[in-house]
Length: 335
Image (cartoon, rainbow, N blue to C red; front, side):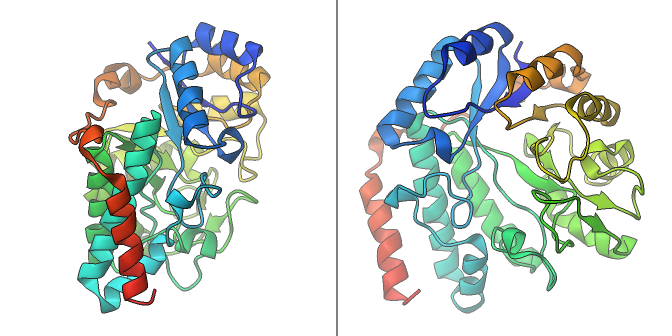
């Protein structure tokens, strides 16, 4: 069984030390970042090497497109931010849906062809006038119906090409003006406003994974951010949203997390987090997680749900035609 830990690696090559530890400890997954990626061929070989060490490992990436782009050095991943498609939808609904489909198809095709298994999309946060650009740009806007339509296209297209989605940042990052990468945001909105943030997550509750928000919600839990809150995990995510899949933490090295690795693990255990995500590339931290992080019963029982079977054969696709169509539509409408 894979250990429920997602790790990162330091560079575009795997060191001997990293190879030995991956082979020995069999983490659930490795998430790749821009520092690990040179080009298509290199990434494909890197993933093949990782899977030769541990065939059941899952290779993840956070490739939303737009502002979050781990392939920014490759023209094939040059897309608009998701919020731009929302704005296009207000004027040209059919065009917006077609562009989102093409963005998701092209992205998922390339990810699948390189050997990725999981992409941490969609961003289901609902923004308002105070939402920071770092979050707002990554959403499909504040209109629930539009966001559902565009996210369904985004998610279903990804799944059809064998890439498993992870909805985030549950139970919602749309009400804060702070970036949890830099500090711990606190949301003091009313319960009624908080409930509105749950609607998108409830609609997509069938997805196999959800990633938590490193945010404190005063009305739900005055003491802990969502990742560490048993109240929020059980009462809000499990009971109200009715999410039955696996819950992974957001990156435990973000500055919203004020605790050392031992206390972080203890608090995740208390909250019943299923998968521990740590992007430090630090095996001292990883060894501590492996030693003390508790494997949940849900994780043990849910291993079967993780594989997304590709519905479309990659060899049958002329991906250049999809790229050309996307670019032609952007040019035609002067976007």
